Image 1: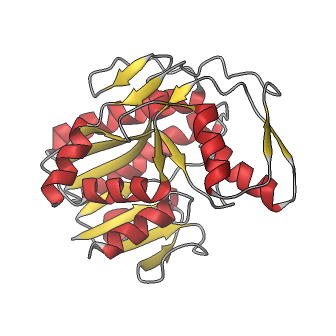
Image 2: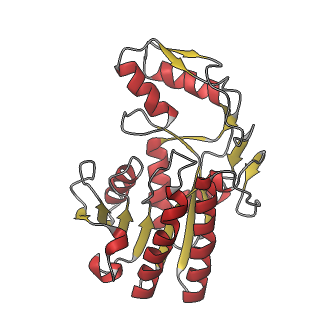
Length: 276
């Protein structure tokens, strides 16, 4: 199979490209830059939104894995709304061109304030521009795929734990602070409970999902259980032997963050069983 991965140079994209290649997929990787992309992929530097016929341009891939998105960690950025029609136009062009399977990276922030386990039937009421735009994209792409008989997969991501500096998550920021020699890291009270998934496991789950088409719709990329933010961050610091302590209460919790939220892992476990 040939998989087109957009946003391939991003924090998440680079790992997913590697995971797909390790599984034997033919990968066409595209982004504005290529400094982090696995060189075993066919790399194409391009502006997705400026291509008239992207399906032909990228060599008629079997699967589109759309991970391109800017300002993902700036939830109030107006770019989420401004870029939305561009994402819709690009994906619609890929479908019109002939791609038979579309997988798009989503986010649990589409759901909004909710407590408990999230499945594909959980109502969405997003509380940020990021969540609003992702949720809108999901609904538009799902409708277009249904109308054109294209396999639709929405990969709903949760909280990803990675120990590199090139991300924008709290874990990447702690790595950055530790490497700078900081002894304290400003933190919230850390009482919220979230679904944490290690970076490598996230990339493998995404790869496993797009490599099959039997299980579709909304698929949670998750571990399936909640953990207190403070506990996971403290464990992360210990796992990496960082000489840094959390300054609890330096920042308030975000008002739209749920107190306890995690993914229903039924679908992803089924996919993993199929692979075995």
